[in-house]
Length: 578
Ligand code: ADP
Ligand code: MG
Image (cartoon, rainbow, N blue to C red; front, top):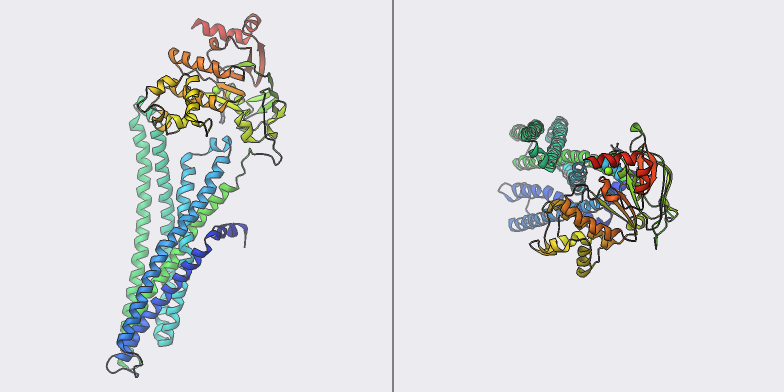
């Protein structure tokens, strides 16, 4: 058994009891389906006038037996339909849990590449198809083979010739069924893909609805949407035509078999080579035969679909997070906050060359260091390397003299606080969003943090104060308010190292003052790397360094750099003129 198969089967392990019971019920269902026509045969052959043998049991007993069988059959069906599906859902849950945990471990590099919608489809649609396979697979195989084999054996025992006649139908029927089932399956997966495209399209347009409307480009978006929506109908059409061929053909085959059995059976009866009771029995079994065939064919489809989903699932799980803890990773305690970048090189993609080329920089404990440079030069990139969101390609980054790659990721990141221009707030209450900085913070601590972040007053003015639901992405708050909530988070987190990446660039003067004030409080006595667009905001920095061409090209205090008349002086001059 290869690794993939054994991994596939391993998800049954916690549910072997359920699976066993499911299979047992499947066995009973098949057996009862096969026994009932035999009861009918006994009644027509033995109990009715002109019976071929002396009755040993009477009609009442047979009737009671049949009723009991029907009751057991119904109960088994109930169990299979209910518990079988629940088992599938439980297995789906387990796999989904594993995949979600994996998603969270994969680094920025992975998430830069992936569309969220695709990842969502993997974790919902694919896994649903799998759960269907997990649940229906064993059952379909068991019921399919038992019923099919049973019908074959029993009818052959009654009348080999007529039985052979029926089974002559089977090869063309199976070929037909497999053919159209495969086409139906292909069309189905294509339309699923199309639906995913429609989803992605809707997500894209709606996420950007503010841009769409501000450019009045609704028609363009509608046209894009219409295209994927139209393709969706095409693939659905294809799916339904094949589905109609499949189910229609199957029932046509069954009817044909019935007709043939009736005609040949009648001839045999006329020639006194067959009993009427046998013909009735045969007809009943022909009626049963279609079900196991459909089950087996369905299984082949579930199997393909589930297994492609499983292959994708395994491929995702096989992606090793490119950034993870070493086996002997260190836990950081008592960080002082000395930061040093030594000869650091980094690029996102080898095709585009490096963003940072042998950059060296040292930030002392408690120092307030400003990093400036034109847009796109790599300031944000540099700041993302410090918490190891990306891995350096060359050189190293040390926190308190220890290479960050030797530290536990969680412990490294716990000691760094980042404020960015864009703030992501979760779609829950203000208090919950602040609490994100320290999960077990008390309400009093949350309020303290909010006060330090100059956020308390506006929060109290919200309809429900700290319990106000800020909705998706905090859209109901202004940029400055969101910024202050994100700063309150950091007061709770209390990291020794702070990175401010254009934290106030998008703010108007009024809210900038409130944010600046809270930032000043936050960065006091902490090592701070501040990236600022507006140079006036960093005049008081302990030191200012200029990033250009992948390295630090100038450094000093504001006055020194102005006197130096280099790049900084030029940039500053330029901004003062505006
Ligand atoms: P800055 O913050 O100085 O304006 P960035 O660090 O954001 O600049 O970007 C530096 C360069 O890296 C730019 O050329 C940008 O296009 C590229 N870049 C930034 N982020 C990514 C990413 N996630 N994937 C690939 N390239 C990126
Ligand atoms: Mg930037």
